[in-house]
Image 1 (cartoon, rainbow, N blue to C red):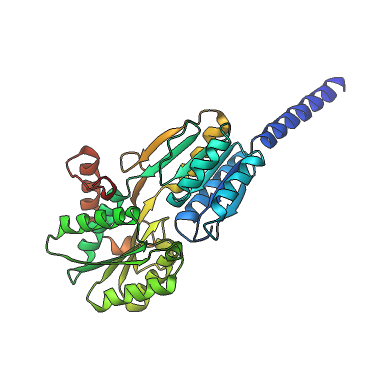
Image 2 (cartoon, helix red, strand yellow):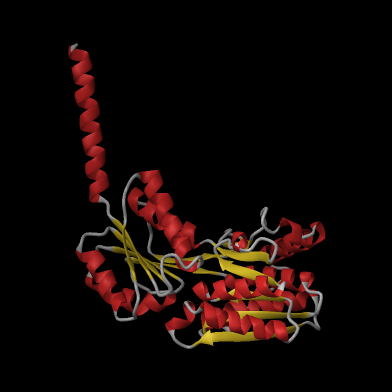
Length: 327
């Protein structure tokens, strides 16, 4: 009886200690414009945070930025409330991270898609051009008209990086291919304008394109719908978006934002988090292209083999893909 009681007390004490430790560690994520459920960049981050929550049992704080003035305030509020690590989504949060991280040197910050050089900041950037090269190849291999398109979100160097990789991949397959390019806008609203995305995609289809790649956050939803309505093909971005319109989604350029967020939370919890720059490309499985039951019928074995060989050649340095942001 006494042993049973001692065991029960020990178990209860262990559970109490574990719960206290969990309560002491508080991670947070600040989503950027476009919303947590944009089916793309922010939503990938959400899935990474949710994976951490389910595996660790630790809840995280979150905030969705709806206007630019909220970025700095949101980061500062998270730090003030005792967040051990704050993940800031998107290049546009760089200046806010730079300022707030200086104010809270004991708080860890992970910034996705831009670099801030501070000891308590981890900057995670991706080789989007490498993944875009592969889906550019896929577009050219699938195209019957010799014309493909690209719809970007906000006209910034990062999105030009996607576009250039896509162009180089398409021309690697067909040097004479014609590639139409449009950006949705020059303000953050460009990330969440599916109506404009659909209009741009339809204009490219009208000019003869039969595959369009969207790197535009929530705006891409309109591109994918336009492809379905037109009987053409679309390529998704960031998350695997093949499921959205099976039969007209050729593939998706996957950017493992989910893994970056999960790793930031988990390493901070374990005490192995490090500041500095992390660069994730094909070699690190940070980018890639999606093949699943939703697009299997659109990707032939020959296409798959060519894309796989190109992936290996890029990793080996046999194929050089231009990084627009290093030009």
